[in-house]
Structure formats: C-alpha cells, structure tokens
Image (cartoon, rainbow over all chains, first blue to last red; front, side, top):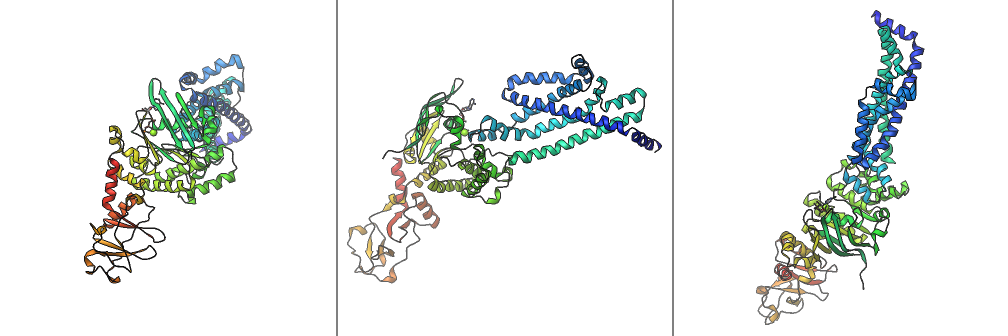
Length: 215
Length: 367
Ligand SMILES: Nc1ncnc2c1ncn2[C@@H]1O[C@H](COP(=O)(O)OP(=O)(O)OP(=O)(O)O)[C@@H](O)[C@H]1O
Ligand SMILES: [Mg+2]
C-alpha cells in the first residue's frame, strides 16, 4: 500500500516530464504509423497488380522486419544521426511487412464476382480500386495497421537509445538506476497509449466503413 | 422489312494459350429479341458473353455492337452502355441494395438524387419492396439477390442486356417465377438480351432463338421449334424429354384449334345426316353474336334433330386465343378435360382445342 501511494506521489512529482515525454512519444509513434501506412498501402496495391514480382518485395520487407530494433537503429545512426529521425524511420520500416502483406492479401481476397460485376458495369481501374477493392479489403488492412500501431508504440521506446526523447527515456533511466518507480512511470503511459491507439483505429475503421458505403 | 441487328459475332474465336475455348462462333442478335446461348458446363458460354462487353478480349474474328466493332470502342464506355448480370450475382457486399442498383450511375457521376430515384423505381420493377433498399445483400435470399442483379443491370437503361445464368441459384419454383417476370418485363422494355443458361426448359421458355454451344463450337442455331427438329444426335440428347413440353409454349393455341366442329344455331335444328357430325359426340350451340351457349350430346337430341334450351350443357371454362398450346394443355390436365373451348375476350367462340391434337402437333413437329 505504502509503495502504491509512494509511486503516485513520485509520479505526481515528475508529471511534467512524463507529459512532455508522452506527447513526444505519441507523435513519433503516430508519425511512424501514418508514414508506414502511406508508403505500404500504395506499395501493396501495386504488388497486388503484379503478385509475381510482389513476392520479392514482401520477402524484402520480411527480412527488414526480422532485424532487431536495436540493430536497425544502430544501422541507421551513421546515416540519419541521432533523435527522432532514425526512430521514425525504423518505425516505418517495421510497419511495412504487416501492412504490405495485409494490403495484398486483402485486395487479392476480394470476391472475384464482385470485382467482375463492377468491371462489367464499366468501372475504370481506379473506380474499381476505390469503390470495390479497397473498401472490401479495408478490414484486413486495418487489422494490420492496428497491430502496427501497438508494435510501434513499443518500438518507440527503443528510440531513447538514439536520443529520441520519448517515454523510453524514463524506462532506460529506471533500468540504469534500478528504480522500478521510474520504469513504471514510463511503462504505464506506454501501455495506455498502445491500447488507445488500437481503440482509436477501431473507431476510424467504423467511420471509414460508413464513408465508403455511402460515398 | 429488314431486322435491326444489335449484336453480331463473326467467326469469333478465343484461345487460352493453345486451347481454343471458343471456336469460330458466328451469330447475330436482333434488336428486341432474347437470344439464348446454351450448352454443357465449360462449353464457352460465359466466355462468349464476356467477349461481347470485352471483359475478355477475343483472339480473332469481329464482334459488332450496334454495327460498331467493339475493339474500336472505349471498353469502359462499352460496358456502361450494356447491362450485365453476372453468373454468380456479384452484388457488392459492402453496399446497400440501393447503392448496388445505382452503382453504374455512381460510376457515371449522376447526382445522388437521380441514383436514389432510379433505385427506387427499379427495385419495384423487379418485384421487390422499397424497404429492401436500405438492406445489405447478405440480408436477402438468393432469389431476391438475383432480382437485384437484374435491377442493377437495368440501371443505366441500356438497350442491350447480357445475362449469365441470371436465375441459376434458386429453386425451380422461384426460377419459373423469375422467368415469367422477365418475360413480362420484356414486353414493356423490349431490350436486346443475350441470355446464357444450361437449362433447356429455360431456353425454350425465354428464348426467341437459341444457339447451342458444344466445346466452343456453335452446333445448332434456330428458333425453339427448329431446335426441336434438329437431327443432330448431340442436340437431341442435350434437349432431352422434359424440354419438349416447353416447346409447346412457343406455339399459339390457335394453331391447334379444331376448325371444323359441328355447330348449330340456337334457333335451328341439327341436320342429323350431315357428314360433319361424323366422329363427334357433341354439337355446339351458338347464337347470332358468335357466342357459344353450350353443347348438346348428339344422343340426347330429339329424333328430328330439334332440341330445347334445357338440353344445352354449359361450356367448361375456356382459354383465351392468346395462350400457348402448353398453357392450354396444362389447363386440360389441371381440370381433367380432354378438350377446352377457346373464347376471345369479347366472348366470341373461336372453336375448341383437343388434347389429342396438341399431342399430334408435337409429333408432327418432331418429324
Ligand atoms: N482464364 C482462363 N484461362 C484458361 N482457361 C479458361 C479461362 N477461363 C475459362 N477457361 C476455360 O474455357 C472454357 C469455357 O469456360 P466458360 O466459363 O466460358 O464456360 P461456361 O460455358 O460458361 O461454363 P459454365 O456453364 O460452367 O459456366 C472452360 O473449359 C474453361 O476451363
Ligand atoms: Mg458460365
């Protein structure tokens, strides 16, 4: 009990620092998800048009995905320096595989009858993509983006090692000082953030569904 | 009068690699007719149909739509101008019925208002209630989905419709109902329809002309009657027995009517020596207005051929001269009669149709 109250006291004392780090953390994670999605979805669309070539792109993304985050940050350091840039770059790279793969799976999984009906009614390739393929692949793509969002919030923690000032700073500080309170002060906001990202994206998905089905 | 041709195929072939799935097919579809393509599974029906709207490009030959070579047309525009009902219905699962029906109008950027109005109009045309408009395809039965598929093809009011087994996924009863509705609808909209099926009964029922495909070749082409008369073994086998009855649906009952039936005026008397009475059991009594009051059995006549009004037996309910032989036969089977009077709308007596002569008709046409 004592410990819990003590923790809250401590948390309250450093609240300003936690707030600043949380906001920075959230921005980096968000930037990673958004940029990752914006690059991977169009790439996925292209790959779905040429699945034979696309396999190699997905393999490549898969290879990148297996690099440990610490190692990847280390690789990027000489090129991108310290701070948020290598961190966000790493986040984007990690988001590629899930988003890419699900975009391709989602689009290729669209009922051929639906596609053919739309084409037969005179949909241009672009109209087919926007009115049929993407809306129907949306749940699969969104599932990947949600996974990536949670993953990204976690990986951003590692960014602290290359000087990206996020909540990782508290966690690593806590570890080096062997101070559980500091670790917790960093971990709890990270967990809450990951969960809220997931929920917010769930909401967005529902919104998108409404828009695509009435547009 | 020269008939206008809406769709024409000239020696059209389609290869997949070295496999020839459509082989030198030629036919022309007249404006306003229902042209049926039929054949066993895998014979190339869908491929042929899809080449017309260029969903599948043909390898050789010419395809003309309203006289224009389809390869000279913009494929997107071509497809927008032709209604298409695909084999597996293919409603868009994420769109409501309303949005599905109006889809082609959305593609051509028509106003929301116009889309909604058209959807409302069409959902009723195909016999669904307006409250279905807000539903999603998964909330409809197979038959209802097929109706939506037809409504959707009609949205842009195309002159030409391509229908690929449009009533494939429903029970026989619903299927027949949908066929009847299509025929009724066709009375008013007069579209040029290319209709694919593998059901011969359906082909005879809806088709004004039928083309039979076998392994990519058009082996037989003609009206239902001509098809029935075909000597080709494959065609004979393919038609089968059940479909013969459907052919009777294409013959107007007037062709089976008995012209020389014994008739007597209500005021006159029967000349018992008349040759015409030979082979008849009854004589029909008519009045001055060309109506039939009933019939009298020859046995019950008085010796001198006179009769009283009381001896006249009322006619059974008749059929209209507009019905087909099939409908008349069905009527007889239903009522357990061997003959039916044919009576026009103004109650005029056209004659009677005998069960036996209907059967003869088929035999004669089989010859
Ligand atoms: N993309 C393709 N590549 C290779 N062969 C194909 C392709 N599409 C169709 N075929 C072949 O072409 C032939 C004709 O196919 P099609 O779909 O036109 O048949 P169908 O008459 O419509 O059959 P069903 O009654 O089963 O619908 C079949 O043997 C099929 O295997
Ligand atoms: Mg087919």
